Image 1: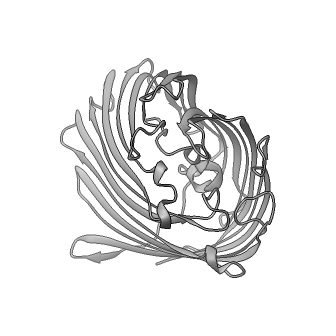
Image 2: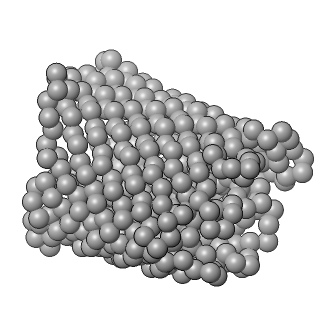
Length: 390
């Protein structure tokens, strides 16, 4: 499914949060507590870091030591044909030199997978996320306060080993701002999506695919120039050759039609590429590339967003591993004279001191070069993290 409804940040997720690009790398499994047949899994993350440009601005830069407190509570139940998971993640960010930037976020998420027969499966998800954004804010120096609600599901018809398989999915999301004085009310919207994908087996480890995605953006502001519908058609393949090479490639075309004639309709090639190569069980190289139309920001009708990232994760011993990632983003703001080029680098060393205790030392560098006034920035983040489980 295309990740278009959530603006350019969706395309940057893999660079800002390295774990997203390494979901296939084995990690220590936290122990659980049995509660009347349910598995309860508490974990706790603590990090201390230094950020030399917390708001990603060109002038009047603010720096601060930053503490992050991130407990997580998971309650799950599994049987032969279904699995259900409920997650609560409250997170506290403390900016020691800039107290106005400190905030607490809340994320509640539910996931359920049901396999009725070998041919019929259903996956459901729902999430509520309330947070404050420190960067790219409407008023300089003041956090944007947001909350996002979304629900979605995918029904799959066809056995996993069958020649043909069809996914049919739908989702709905609400984006709201809690800023005072109606700031950013023009960005509030409801998003409705529908998508379907047909997979056809062309080999023992390879399937071709054809995907259609339709998304409707309804902004709450009357006669908003950003209300639109977006349609995309993609074709590609998915494969998994032994344990060493896997990937998924989708290439296609999308079109965005605006409700108001004041905004020009847009069309754009789109692609999503995910590749992984494991020359050794303890070493993984990854490549991802994205291009899609994202929702407009800072006065633009939409953003043509392109992001590419390469990475390498290597386990030097059973306890010590390193992660290196380099990403490049290109963003064209439609309706404005603005183009951004973003470089994003991440380096970290992970030491699994105990099965229940991991320590990570990381560094991140971000360099945004924009041809618009006051939109370029440099940012360095140094961070020491501790991840604790049972």
